[in-house]
Each structure stands twice: as structure tokens, then as C-alpha cells.
Image 1 (cartoon, rainbow, N blue to C red):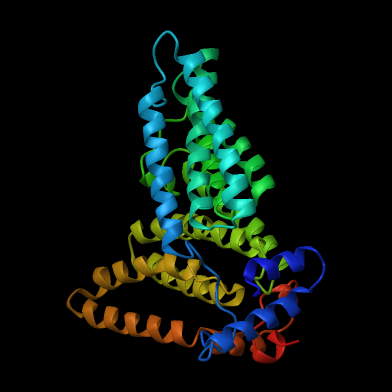
Image 2 (image 1 turned 90 degrees about the vertical axis):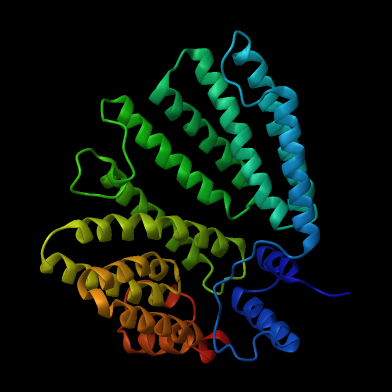
Length: 356
């Protein structure tokens, strides 16, 4: 008989182990397997599947849903019977997805099938929301706002039951689409891609992007600080919120500065990206750093012309070294920083703290 990470997480949830004890136990198990012999600190957990059987099941779920759509016409939202039939078929799909999640998520603890079921729940919920909106006579932006909001509510319930981390990513997208559609319904022009990130463009959408990004960051940090040793699903949920919050914040500020004329905005952009890199190291989340890399490359081409390749080479080397020495660098930065609110709730930054 052997214990896996889900058993340890369950022990933490049941107050049998504390989070530091669980982290130490998981680290010891990894060291015995030889997977952390060269790792000085905690990694940023990320898991999509645990074996090819999970991939096999995901393929089966995808084919199953495709067959269901083809058989029932779930993709149609027009026609005399669309409101009734499509809504009923959508609710059946929601119910079946819920039942499958009880088996693959709660009983089997499978990762990839659980992620696929979040996708299927989102699609099924959206279909039900569209059919209800169609029944009420909603059109265009109002239909989008209602159906996205309805989907977001069902996904929030789904997350409350099954705690699948990637669900919060889908919820965040649903909130963004709902809010944006409400503004379009209120008279704003439908946004283009640049309108979502350019603060200098007309319309409220770039402001919506950065505000929702900051809200997502706040919630993600709450998840992180409630599980600094990253042994529960709260930290995984925080990971997915960081994945969507980081581009929303970084792209909105960076693209606005990048498109501005003159040297001053470009200097400010470099300082902003450097600040985001330090922030990423402090909170031990690489997403903010990754979100800004593209702008550094673009700036290199814009400012240096023929010398850009050399800068990109140095950048690539720096990223490789940073990835290899992330924990050591983070330990030095965190040790050098003075005490600030929440510092003791961030992930440990040294072997001494990790083992306590």
C-alpha cells in the first residue's frame, strides 16, 4: 500500500496533517524517487495528466460529446423548436457531465478527464444559457451577456462541488465576456483585439481588462496565501488565475506603452517589465515574467535593429539560468527585502523555512 499526493492533500483537508508537514512528507517522497535531488526549494505545481490512460479517456469524452452534438443538433440555436429541444438536450448534457465528474474527479481523482469535463460543462451550460436567452427574445449583446453569465454561475457551482482548479480560469473568462457584453449592450462599440488592451483607444474595454485582471490577481494571491506550501488544490486554482490575470495586467500596460511614441514610454515599459519580473519572483509565480517576455523581444527589434539577435540570445540564456536557479535567486531577494504585510504567508524561500 502506498500514499499519493491526493491522499496527502486529503489528510491536510481532514486536519490530520498540517501544510508544512504535508510539504515535508511530499518532498521526502520525491527525494526518495530521485525527482528533487537538484531542487533547492518548492516548484510551481502544474499537472495536466498522470498517464496515457487519462489521455485515452479524454479522447473518448471528446468523441462522446461530438457524437451527442451530431445526434441532437446541440450546436443549433435557431428554428421553431430551438428553445425547448436545445435547452432540454443541453440540460441532459449538463447532468451527464456532472455524473461523469462524480466518477472521474471525486472517485478516480483523474486530472486530464476532470479538465475535459470542465470544458464540456462550459459548453453544455452555454448551450442552455443560449436557449433560455433565445426563449426570452434576447438578441446579440444581451444574449451573449446572459448566456455567458448563466455559464459562469453553473461553472461556479461546478467548482464548489468538484474543486477542479482550471474551472476558475473558465469562470474568469465568463465574467470578462459577461461584463464586456453588458457594456456593448449599453451602447459601447464591439471591441477589436487592440481595444481590449490599449488604454489609449476609445471605449471602456482596456479598463475592464486591467480591472478584472487586478481582481483576478487579488483572488489568486488569496488562494496562494491560504496554501503557501502548495499541497492543496487552492494553489492550483491560484495558478490558473495567475495565468489569466498576468496577461490581462501586463498586456494592457505594456502594449499601451509600446505603441506610444518616444523614448520615455519605452524606458517606462522596461522599468514596468522589470518590476513585474521582480514581483513574479517574490510571489513565486512565473506567469508575470512569461507575459512580459514577448515585449522585451519586440523592444529589442524596435530599438536595436541589427543587434537584436544578440540581446535575444542573452535573454534566452538569462531565462534558462533563471529557471535553473529560481529558488536560490528568490531566497536572496526575499531575505534582502524588509518585512511587509503578507510576506510570511508567501511560499517559503529557503530550505530552512521549507523544513519547518
